[in-house]
Image (cartoon, rainbow, N blue to C red; front, side, top):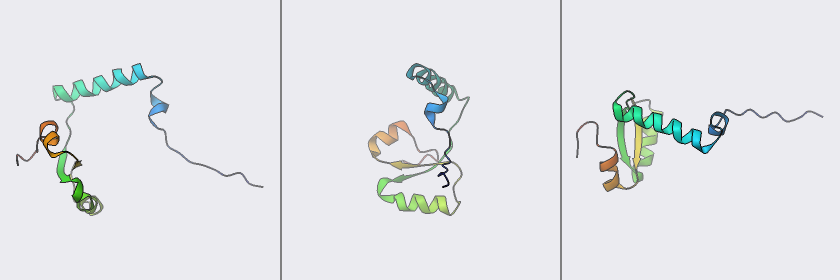
Length: 87
C-alpha cells in the first residue's frame, strides 16, 4: 500500500521561533516603511462590495502593485491615502 504524499510550503512559524522575534522583525519592516527604505505600491482600492471587481483586475493582469479591499472607509483614508491623490 502506498503512502499519501503531502506538499506544503513554509509558513510563518517555520521562519519565526517565538513572538519576541516576530515583534522585532515586524518592527524592522515598519521602520523601513516609515523611513521610505521600503515602499508599498498600492495600485487601487476597492470597497468590500467591489471584491469581484478586484478579483477581475487581478485575473486580467491589469494591476501594478497591491489591491486593497476597503472594509472601513473612514479608517482606510487615514491608514492608506489614495496614491493617485483622489479623495
